[in-house]
Picture 1: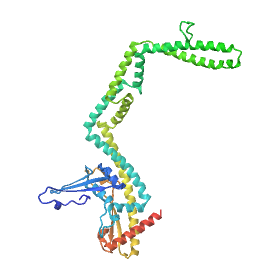
Picture 2: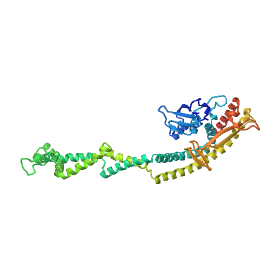
Picture 3: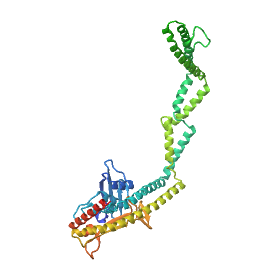
Picture 4: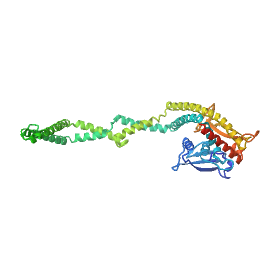
Length: 433
């Protein structure tokens, strides 16, 4: 039962209400198996395995779980087909399992199937994403609405303050300057006097520029060539000191005491601190929180209009998916006829001249409870990762015999010859492309 097979009430022990069977599947990186588990929303353990559980009650009801999620029984069957090979005389070859039989047709058909299959899978991935989002918004509408309100409140608070990147750092520096304006003015004034001289023109305090000017006059008046050559270097120093003096003068003009400005800047800093206490360590973090909140809110619209728009998109994708599924099925049906004829012809050279292979391609009909149901040609079918088709190889052992599944109609030796014929046909198909 854990493999998705038929659950029998007789397996429930007398006096008990239910029977349970549990198994652990090792995915081993198998792409098909991983896709099935992902689509089911199951949780994979750290070691890359997933637990399957099947429960059968005495009233005949059956429940299936995969990775902690309730799933249709068919999901367990699909998974087991990807991962389990049952060995015995008549069904020892994994290639005879339904999923592998479908893979045989796909391999034989080549691009005729792989191209529509790729288009089908691309649409299916988008369809599943929309279905999941619609389900999420519908089932968690109240919770998401509450979260959206909290995010909306936070964004309103941040937008009201309208912080700028790095503004908290800039304010801290500005406050330091405003609070220490007298100390800064004293330092800048002393430096300016040392460079440009006393503001009242005191000849006893000429400053560095005055001293350099005096030194230049002494050198240029000398008759010694070496001393005169030092003059241009003093000129360079004089230019540099003039620039520093100008900048110090400009700085002093900006240091006027302004208590009102200091109070304003402190108030702005307080507004920013209220945000950083609630949302992040600094203003840049607050802005990042706001960006993330806006992104999250875009996925939390649970209004009737938003849900209706998602439902419309889901239905549109379902129609497109059905079209691709139909194209894929038609390609497989055509390939199945050619493959069956080729295998039959090959078996005639393997002492099975009267045997005939038939390959059926049928869509798996489901009801509305299947989360992966899509309507194709007016019928609800299971839209799996490989399409909507169930493929089965049938063997007519001789003229007049009914076609039966290969593993039931063939003996052990016949089964080996059928498999050999299949491999030969596939080898010819591979080399022929």
